[in-house]
Image (cartoon, rainbow, N blue to C red; front, top):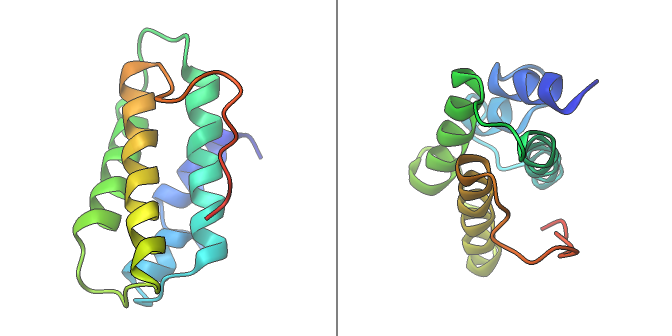
Length: 113
């Protein structure tokens, strides 16, 4: 599955996705979150030199970032530092997608959270 297809799978909240677990089941699944953020990073890398992106891709990033940051319906993961790192990660990925430039220097390693 390509990164764009994986993002669509996530955006549609299909089985096993972070958004399904968090939105419907109200569970923060760390493994699913890491898959989501890796997929978003791959999409950023793939689209970095594009002047335009499909609206649904922008919406997927915007929704995921806002959901993680603002939604109060799911159980917050512990410790608080992890959750703050997750929110920051989503913001960085949105910034990268919308500007076309990673907020980090080339060669930066994005560790799983």
